Amino acid sequence: MGNYQNTRHHAKGPREMLTGGEWIYGRNPVEEALAAGRRTASEIILPPAFPDEDDQLQRIRDEAKARRLVIRTMERNQLDKLTRFGHHQGVALKTTGYPYVGFEEILAAVEADENATVIVLDHLEDPQNVGSILRTASAVGVTGVIIPEDRACGITPAVARASAGGTEYVKVAHVVNLVRAMQDLKDAGVWFTGLDWGEDAKTYTDIDFRGRTGLVVGAEGNGISRLVRENCDFIAELPMPGGFESLNAGVATAITLYEVLRQRG
Image (tube, rainbow, N blue to C red; front, side, top):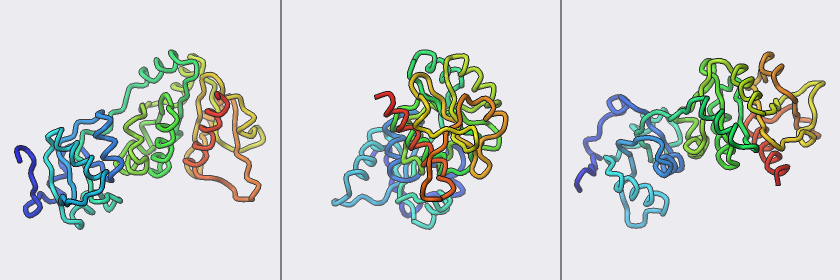
């Protein structure tokens, strides 16, 4: 078996295994992390192998062997604790932390692409919303995502799970000052649209999203902060004839991103 170890009966406990790195969990996030290759993985937890194993699990197992990862099995209750009761599907991968990029890398990519699209997350704290946004961002080919360093959800294993692995294909930068980052991007030709409501808001389909575009998504409940909103060129709202007050941030962002694609043909 070489370096491949099956330690079903003497696996390390969750506390011991938590030291160093982080654990991505769920089949899709683990498969995409291995495929993207942006992180360094060291070991993987998989269910015991069976002859009738489904295709996705077999692909993950084959890739783990090809990368010479330590392969372990773990009782479900231990894996629940390791993943903090996340929906792990019996699969977890120990990797280095999320590979954030520098803001300058996203800025350079924007300057090089007349149709660049960036997303600014204004202090979102819900991992499900952040993961959903990154999943769509990956699908439509967003240039980069900007998040603040403080009072915001980073790219955690829970976010990776909610994104179905989309986190591994999107450039995400931490910045200290969102407004300063927006100003630098505006100097590079980005026009910012905030997804919010108010007397100054236009229906999202009435905004011209051709050219370099930035979408600003506000925090759950509080919306876009005052200074960030003041630096938006437009405010967009989604019509809701059914009378429901709002969509969650992930859904609103997805709808608007696909309008961006539609306008660009």
